[in-house]
Length: 77
Image: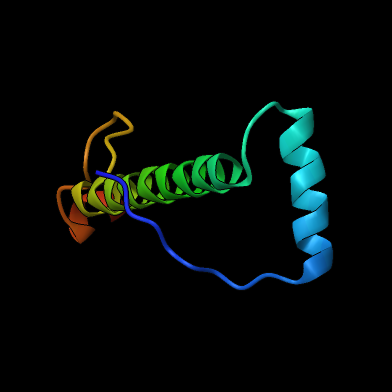
């Protein structure tokens, strides 16, 4: 579902946006929509990676080898 919104931009930005939109055979509205969509997707992927990294840190990593049994076992000769 689409909905119109009103935004305020500097006149120079609007001029440059018109040129950019024309070069890409699209509208300013579509140009802004595509950029916002890309930004939102990027943020969602970042948040997912962040959550996964924190989960991995909480789980820990297994690098092989044996765990230390006790302090005494470590210092046995």
